[in-house]
Image (cartoon, rainbow, N blue to C red; front, side):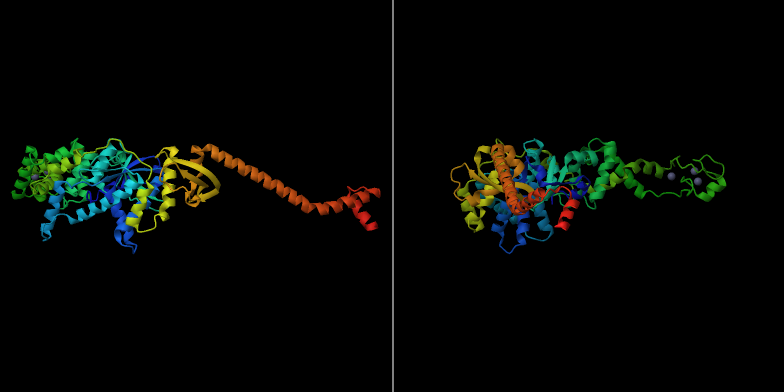
Length: 509
Ligand SMILES: [Zn+2]
Ligand SMILES: [Zn+2]
Ligand SMILES: [Zn+2]
């Protein structure tokens, strides 16, 4: 779930981008999230789960690599203690016997099954000591990566700056983009405000949040508090101890017991309207009737208390409900979000050349298909990884450009490649011949492109001159007869330039 309805709150700053716009970026990907999506995608298929999920994952990774996006996968570690506690609480509430999260265990096993595929593809991954989205966010916040790819909205509370959401593998994939900068500027919400929101509206660690408080009320309270408090989270944290709030709450309770005496419906001061009309109002300073000036507040004991509490009414109402939970605001939740204590363990992230031998065994074991069926796709990935600079350019060598072509509306060259790495089967020209984007190829291997274009030009010239010759040969017989015709006519002393004269000749002849 992440944080209750936070995506809805963030909707106004949502942008759409096509995946190809992310070319060149390093993106920390929550592997669990991608696994879940792959599962969803595979459920539409009849093939049973794990290996279909693996295939979906494989194609998604290839798609990213082909676009020049550098994926760094992040795995879930153990769940924070408060999450487990929450689960236990829910199980007891629902009348189930408490058990360890078998779901999480199953989920972790699934993630682990993906590791041989990532290893064989040469894609780096790291394990979080806690939630994967937490480490993604920390990596993003410390600028190790350009963005996070996750569907968990709590990534912002963990410090994420840019979040990509809803990655699905389609040809012209678009992705939802959220920037923390926009959240701060347009929605006037900072990271600490979002943590305050999670405490109020609910998140994975306190699923229900404050009773009766949804997304709208939580946001309104936060914006209200911001007017007089620079740090809303700090204000909420002070709710239990703050003596002023305690005194105000006492007022509220007193007011409930207090019998409000009759007030004038016209000036809102003590007394009835009919008496005010006859004898005037003390507060209004009138002898009869009352002024219509309602800005002078009534100072009766009831109003005295009421006017003190009025500006705090919303806050007090929510505070009372919140404090019914004796853990509120749970410092462990705040600590979980704001303490960047997760082991990042990032030294140097490297993308390696995929290992065909290892990939083969992954394909055989998990995909149950002939590995050679995937060879061409992996070669495509290696070529594009090298062209985009994820791998050294020396990994690939263009052998020959066969022809111009198109791929998904992009101008391409059908190019035969050789992979300069031991263990790669380079013997099949068919598998090694792939559609390669023209501009990419030209920027990295200008000479081979120039040669090909020259060759094409030559061929074109040759073709057109051949065409000329051919058409001349075709025309020749006619021209011959004309040439034969005219000289004979000329010899007959007629001017051949004039058609009218020629006509005459024809007539006379
Ligand atoms: Zn009055
Ligand atoms: Zn009055
Ligand atoms: Zn009053």
